[in-house]
Amino acid sequence: MSSPTLTIDLQALIANWRALDAMTTCETAAVVKADAYGLGLGRVSKALAGAGVRHFFVAQANEGVELRKVLGPGPRISVFSGHMAGDAGLLGANDLTPMLNSVDQMLRHVESLPGHRFGIQLDTGMNRLGMEPGEWVALRDIAVAQKPVLVMSHLACGDQPDHPMNAHQLNSFKEMSGELDVPLSLSATAGILLGKDYHFSLTRPGIGLYGGLPFGAAQPVVTLDVPVIQIRELEPGETVGYGNTWVATRPSRIATLGAGYADGLIRAMGGGARVFADDVACPLVGRVSMDMLGVDVTELTEDPTHMSILGPQQSVDDLAREAGTIGYEILTSLGPRYARLYRE
Ligand SMILES: *Cc1c(COP(=O)(O)O)cnc(C)c1O
Image 1 (tube, protein in one colour):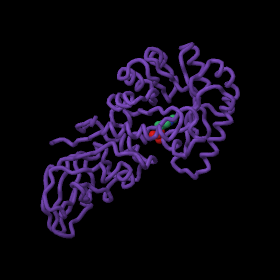
Image 2: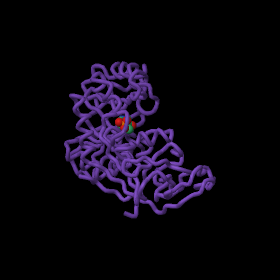
Image 3: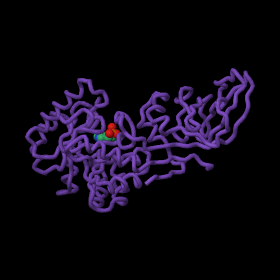
Image 4: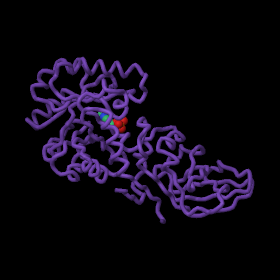
């Protein structure tokens, strides 16, 4: 194996969707924006559709066009950014359902695609996307007369179960959507875990499908193995990598691995991250380069030919913690250079 290899376990992905689906009595969609969180829109979506997912969400109309090619007619594809200027043709031709987020989008939609299916996004406090309470009061009756297929909002602090923002947004969503005879959706992965008050008619998990927190019971979906290019002996006092940031304090064996920050192994993960030879953890040493990183393998009894960075020993969230970020960012940064192996 000469190139680093990302293995994506589609059975684990499906098991995660089923586990999240089993926590509710409502419909469970799948969020596959950003190339299915970096894991491959086509393979991931096909596997999920095969397991029974009938409703997919993407961020942009262009992603919806790609997804429609993969899925063919049938499954619903909804677009979080709504109906942007110039998108009417794409939305219409590919049967995409925009989640309208403003009066302007509503007008654009009914003028350019009259009768075309749409949903509505309400802002319950995150101040990111959606109609605000004042705007919604003015538009509500007109919008409802056009028969939206979904009314949704999004939690800002769902991954902190005790945060008062959750109850605040839940109340605000209930007030804004009260007495509507329309399917409702409030929760992504985190909201599913908050319990049935948050489930409504449809949930929209993303990260939990891909094995990330806050779904702690998720099965790991990605493994990342990187080949060793070279191993060298260092005397005490010798240094490794740019900036001489790591200095050997004992006779050391240093392996140079063939992946770096251009592959999403961001420089910020620095000293705390570990790299595994089977189950033995070895510390990352020195700065991560664009295509390489150094690992102290002094403790190993045999020279490894490749080492594991993501897998059962170290999750995307473990790595994220070392880099001061979140699993979502690690996954979506992995990039196109890996050989990808899909385990069916
Ligand atoms: C990304 C996103 C989701 C999925 O969120 P996860 O935390 O990955 O489950 C759901 N809804 C909206 C509006 C989103 O932007």
